[in-house]
View 1 (cartoon, rainbow, N blue to C red):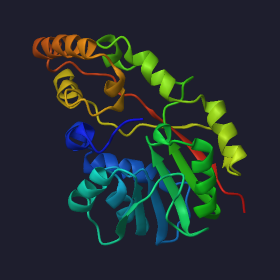
View 2 (cartoon, rainbow, N blue to C red):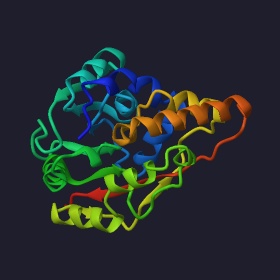
View 3 (cartoon, helix red, strand yellow):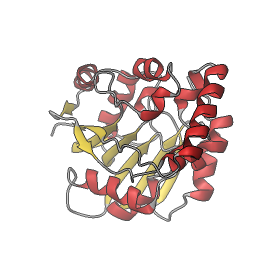
Length: 253
């Protein structure tokens, strides 16, 4: 497990920041699977520093609940991502501090692989969703891993990342065991803006991805030394944009 009360909390905002446009693309991507009526109640499960939470309130009208187990990440969200329709709550995916059938949608944005008990977490998602409500599992899947350019600089990262995630079929089977109905998906969404090699290096250098918590320091140092040199040599080189996978889950009526 990764300690988000430590170093990661201090670098997360700088290394994982989203533009307003990027947040709006994400909220637009999930609104297609939710009712048109407003307001809708949304749960941001594993809300971290609140990158998306206020945007969910803007799109769906609130209330929006950001549930986050890391005290430090939640404190940052409360000061840097405050919104009148957002409430940040201490809790975990396995014990969501909300009543049964109280939310229209649940977003799990790159948080599922951090859940200690994924089946229990999905059972909790089923519990808090209203019948017919939708949950959005934004994750990587072990059998659909993108070939990220920076893996070339950190050779162990491919294996580390693949080991963090379940396959798509395993994820669907867990959802079904929890009483949720998975879509045929995943749905592929392109929301990330194009970046140059320099811009990519400037984000990665903060080591805000949990992958780096599992890599040897010597490999990290070598990789960033080479990446920095390449960014100096070709700063304006366009880097690939990777579509993101979302598995849509529903609580049956």
